[in-house]
Length: 253
Ligand code: CIR
Image (cartoon, rainbow, N blue to C red; front, side, top):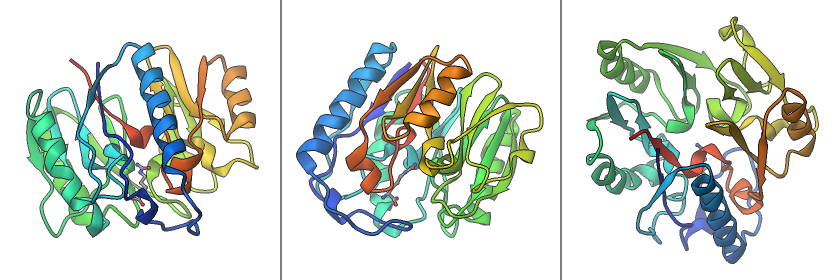
């Protein structure tokens, strides 16, 4: 497994914000947190591929939003925030080494943070970032490879994966206030602790779950459900509305 990552941008203090008020981001701390996050991925067997920093692209550490990588192809997104569209080019260059790439074109928009794959089903958040045309283009790209695409309404959060992520082969971590669990009738659900609405974003790799240290009560619930949880400090990314899945694009070799 390769993990594409990109260092924190020197411009991150000018990041996009949708649901949070702006608060000071310590770039030095953000850089250290990102390094630790990368070390955790490496400890789980990921081979790190670090892209060049992009000082003029404030949200460029959040590489997840730029691409959807499947075993068969990669779909390069057209992020919903115009300020983020230039992030895609360098990701495209990196991904073309491993996958045939298809691009989402205007007027479509799609953020990778809205895309949750569960087996051969690809759930896509109908968020402020991913529009109907973007979801239609994604379906046109992946249906020929045997996937089905299921649009999912979300409310109160930035992306589908702010509300729900996969933490095991048949287990979701979910915030029921932001998404309807009825979309996944066959799966077990671990619900976030009510005081930790942002804790539904977790990154499942192999036999471990990477999870933000800001969600200790939810972490207890994951541990009680039998998961090996690796907490990482993400405080500065969280001020930019980022979390653990957003900081990498995973590519199976
Ligand atoms: C944005 O609003 O686009 C960034 N500030 C945060 C993106 C986080 N991405 C993600 O959760 N996939």
